[in-house]
Image 1 (cartoon, one colour):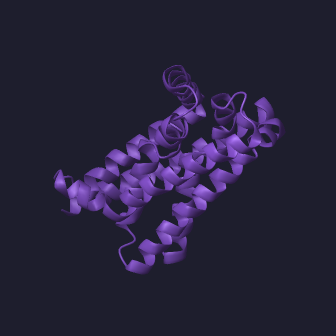
Image 2 (cartoon, rainbow, N blue to C red):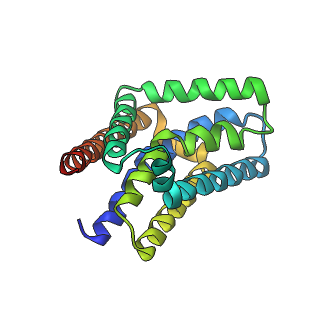
Image 3 (cartoon, rainbow, N blue to C red):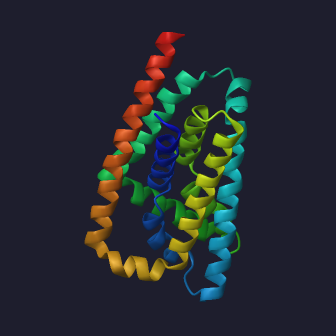
Length: 209
């Protein structure tokens, strides 16, 4: 896989995993009664926190795994299986139900003050799937320039997520129930294919070692 292909694959993987359109209705559910300025602040804080977390794992994810004695091959298989499970939930509409439950718990406990950090930044934006994807992607991008491009990809994903949250009302109204269902399933199929590729690469790495 060439450098450009790897960057495009990283962009698609992260966008599908984070699923900005899927976050739009949840963002509205988490910010009832807020004016546009307040929602903008929540969206900005959530995406900044998400960017910082994913960047940390993009830079030091391998070292964190090394600390626990986990090989890249093993993590590729585990991460691929996790991404596949997320894809399965997206295709069969289980992921939205789980996210909505997380949102309800957060509103009950913390009300409005900390929703940018939880559950928006964690785990809706920088969840286990996105963190796994970032660590797996960083494994194939070792050079400083390549690693910098990965961080730019994360930044681009956060920018797209931020804009989507700002336009949440319009996006949700435009997609509607049918459009949202079709988009979620389509993204799920794409993510499933990427997950299978991660598992295949992981198995090859484990066999080689």
